[in-house]
Amino acid sequence: MKHHRLALPAIAAAAALALSACASGPAATTDDNAEPVTGGSLTWGVSVEPVCYNPQRSGQQNSFPIIRNFAESLVGKDSDGEYTPWLADSWDISEDGLTYDLHLREGVEFTDGTVFDAEAVKTNLDFVADPANATAAGTGLTNFSGATVIDANTIELTLKTPDAAFLDTLASITTSILSPASLALPDNDLCAATSDLVGTGPFILSDYQAGQEITFTANEDYDSAPGYAAHTGRAYLDSVTYRFLPEATVRTGALSSNQVDIIEGVQVTDTTLFQDQPGYVYETGPSTGTAFSLNVNTRIAPADDARVRQALRDGFDLDALVENQYLGTVQRAFSSIGPDSPFYDESLEGSWGNDVDGANDLLDEAGWTERDGDGYRTKDGERLTIVVGYPEPYIRDQRDVLLQAIQAQVKENIGLDLDVQSISSAQFTDELATSSWTVYPNTLPTSDPSILFRSLFGSEGFLYAKDTAASLDELIAQSRQTSVASERKAAFDEIQQTVVDDARYIPLYHPVYTVASTDLVHGISFEPQLNSPASSYDLWTTK
Image (cartoon, rainbow, N blue to C red; front, side, top):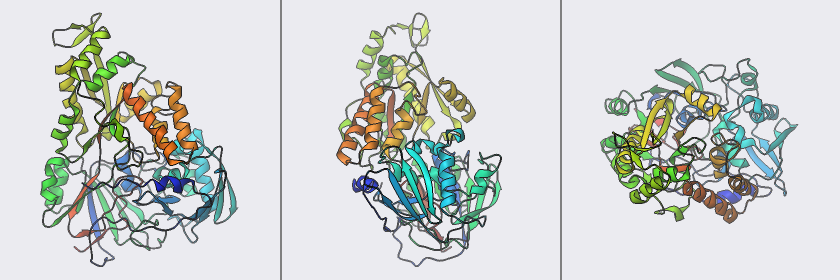
């Protein structure tokens, strides 16, 4: 497994004054000395079909490698965590940290033929920042005050308060710049795969079969690659197809039988079929986003009792379950942020978990002292039950199997009924709106931790809206207002400690993307801002 902790200078870069961006090295991860070839096509086998293709509205991590083929950001982020040019060539930040002047790349067009310019950027940022649009990206623009067009290629962005996460927000796929014509359509949800959803990217949607596959063809006029890309100009490939193959065994079979050229989400037990095997390439990405975790709703009984949550946290052997499930390909989690982030909190390692006696003591203390005929604890005739509602479109990497193993252990060890349910995304949306969700298993892709923590733990976030500890809000705000790396890390460490201590958040493991391909596929890379496979821009083939 490849682990590359992002460098702390990335933090300084975010706040550097009068910073001019500069290009960085290529992102390609394969050791390939052959000369790239232009032309040909490749087919991916991917684990999920995107629920929404609009980057400004999608919260589905596995949708991003597909969306990246047509949607681009103002800023790039390389594998060292440094920010690079993309649709913005460079930027200047005022001394007070409240003004960002972005100098846009000239000669760029959206693939509908309209011009990319400062007016288009203003239209997009105003749209995303408007709460009425409820875009997924809005949380990153919390401190955004407004945009002023200086000239066609210069735009001034002002903030309400200094924001150390602002460049990271501009690098996010969720703030990708879409054609203003797309945003002006009556149905600006634009979640469907349609030619109305237009960006500046290296590929153009050419065919879509719901539930089957989506195909993109090369944008012949493309010349706006991010600074971290391995090349410039148009994509090497003429076309690329993503086949939706949710079953891991089917993806493995498709690659082994040459029905597809490259797959993601390699099943752990299939790793040996591709890793270090002649004819194949196997790659793993970084882990800087949040751990795959149980987010516990502290407003619903019996999980409104911290002792019950802590008993759940410590009532099973997580080390053994993760090892058995993933065979050493991932790292068991103790904290919120992945081990490749400069904000990873090592001090939490070994600090909690697998304390069955302690968990039983906590439940006794909380009054769950009786047992029913099935061996579950009860109180006042009610079974000790906590529901886990896992939205089906977000299930991947056999995470549901891990939850079932935890379910079995907490029943056996502490008499807790962990009711793991697969629910629809619509059902989860309804539960979120009414705050009736119970336990939400999830992970968030890499971003500045202040953005991740605001979404997960802040009173303005989507999980604990209007119901979180004031101290967490203060710590999140503190981490975002300062550019001093040590102060930011101290705030992040305290947040991670707090949510694990009161067990509103139970980290399980740090996920990594896995990719396998035939050795005729070249240029495989991961987008550091996403941790996931990048777009197919740098891919090429010798088949």
